Amino acid sequence: MALAAFATACGGGGSDPIGEKPPTGPAAGANAGTGAGSGKPKGGKADFDTVFNTEDRIRQALPDPGAMKGWKPKTGRANIEEQPKSAAECGPDTHWDCTRIANGSVKFEAAGENAYFDIQAYADKKAAEAACSKEKDWSAKYAKAEVTPVPGVEGHAYYRNAGGSDGLDLIMCLGTVIAEVRLEDGGGSSLDPATVHSLAQLFVPRIQKAAAP
Image (cartoon, rainbow, N blue to C red; front, top):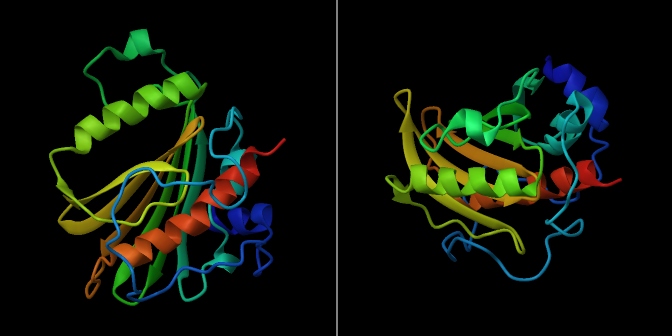
C-alpha cells in the first residue's frame, strides 16, 4: 500500500487535527519512567471495543505525513489477514502476533534516525490482551528503556538490536490493538526516549480517532 494513499485517507498536506508535533532531536524530561500512566490520554478513552478490520481504518490510525514535521515519509502499508488464526491454531508457544486479523505500518526518516509506526489489530480486547501479555514476556530479555508513558495507556519500552540496527521500541496496548513506535539508528541517532514519547503522543490520538464510531 503506497504511503501516498495514507496521506489521502488521513487528510494529508498538514490537515491532521493533532496539534502536538514530534521533535526531531532530544527533549527534556525523557527519563520519567515507563508503564501505565495516570489519567486519560488526549482524544478520549484508550479502552475501546472497535475492531480494526478494514484497510481504511488501519490507514486512519497511522500517522499522516502532514503531522510529521521534520520527517520524510518513506514507506507505508495496510494488510487484512484473509484467514486469521484462532488461539487454538496458534498454540501456546507461537509468536505474539499470530492471532492478528490486520496490521499496518509507516516509516519516516530524519537526520540520523528512522521512525516506524506499527499497528497489530485483533478480533476483540481479550485477544489483544493475550497478545500483549505474550509480547511483554517475549521482550523481557531485552534491556528496559525508560520512556515517559502516554497518560492512561499501558505500555513498556526496551532497547533491541534487529537486523544489525540498534533501536528503541515502545509497545502500547490500546483496546483491540497493539501499537508500536520504534526509533532506529540510521547513523547518528541518539535513540532519545523523549522523541519516542512525543511520537507516541501523536500516534495514540490517531488510533483513538480511527476507533471512534
